[in-house]
Amino acid sequence: MNNNVIMNWPGIKVVRQLSVSQLIKEHMGYLQRIHTDIGNLDEIPGFADLVSDWERGLEKLRKCRVLIMLGVGMQPQNVQNHIDCLGDSGIRAVTFEWPEFVGEMASFKAQSWWLEQQEITKDKQLVLVGHSLGHLVGLQFVHDNSKKIAAFLGSSGPCRSHDDVFPAELVELLKKIEQMSGEDGMQTWVQRADQLLSKFRIKIADIPARTKGGLGAMARIYLAHILPSTPDYWEKLYRELPDNLPAHYRYGLHDRTVIRGVGMGAVFQAHNAEIVFDPNADHMMYSPQNTLKVLGHLLARS
Image (cartoon, one colour):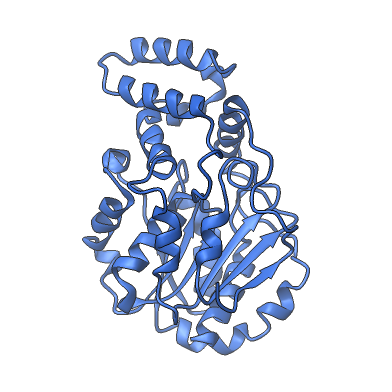
C-alpha cells in the first residue's frame, strides 16, 4: 500500500458477518430504496481538506468523458442528478443500462470486454465512476484499458479478502437460484424460488418486482465475486492497477451489504489510491456535488 489516504476507518478490516437471510434482505432493501435515496448529502469529516484542490482539476476534467457505471438494479435515471450536476460545470457525463445478459457473462473480464465494444468508451480519455457492480467492472476495465483512463472513482465495490467471509449457505442458495433461472414458465419458477428463499426466511414478495425475472443473473453476478477464478483475484486486480492512476475508493460504514457481508482486505492492496470510509453513508453513491469535487480533485492530481 503506497501513499493511501484512509479516512474514518475504525481499524478493522472485516465487520461481523451477516447471516444469509440478513445479507440478502439488506440488498433487497437497497434495491427498493435506490430510486428515491440515491446519494448521501452529509459531509465527511476531513473531506473538504482532502478535495480542497478540486476546482484546479475542472479544466482537465472538461476534456474527458465521464462514464458512470451502474450497480445491480439501478437504471440510468438514478444518476441523472449526477449527470446534470457535472453538465452544469461543462463536463460531459454519460451512463448506460447493463444489457439483460450481463449476468450470463462468465466473468467481470467478459463484461469489461463488452463495454470496450460500446461507442461510449471510444473517447481517448475516460474518467470512470463505478458504483457497486460498476465499481467491480470498472476495476477490470481500468486494468484492461489503462492508457485511456484518466481517473477512477469507485464506490461500494464488494471485494473478497477472507475465505470465511461468505457463509457456505449463501453459496448454496445462489447456485440453486442460478440453476433454476433457466426453467420455462415464470409462475413455476417463482413458486420454486419462493420455496427456496423461504428456507432462509426470505419472502419473494420482499424482492422488487422488476428484479424477479433477473434473479438468476443476479445470482451469477454475486457468485462471480464470491467465487472468483483465483482466491486472490481482487487483491491482484487492485495491486496491478497503474501506480500513476488517480483513484478514489469510497465506502459507507453503514453499508451492511458490503462492509458486513464482504471482506474488505483486497482494497488495501491498491497503490496510490485514496480510501475513504464515510461514517454517515450506507450502500449509496456520493452526492452529485461530492462526485464533482472528487473528480476535480483526482484530475488536479494527475
